[in-house]
Image (cartoon, rainbow, N blue to C red; front, side, top):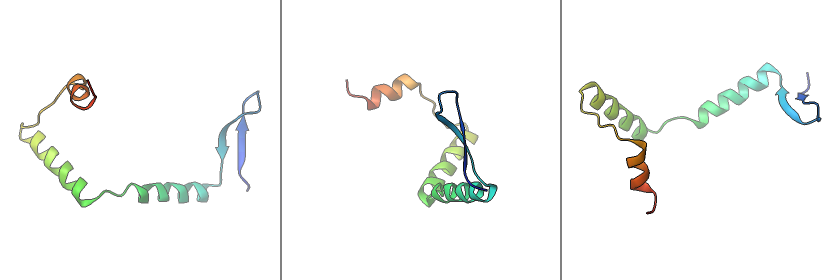
Amino acid sequence: MTTQFITNDKGEKTAVIIPINEYEDLLHQHHLNLELTDEYKAMMDEMLDEEAKGKAEYVSFQSIKDRFLPK
């Protein structure tokens, strides 16, 4: 089976149909690219632990925006 496209009434490609084995290969490659570093895993574990112990601090979107965007 070759790659097929679905087009709208203007002839623009809106979706693609690929063989399942190609899809699985793409999905597998995507997951490999998302492998987490040990540092990130440790940070997530710490955050989840703080939340479980009731020590997590939640901030508003506005406070984050104010901290990082130039004034």
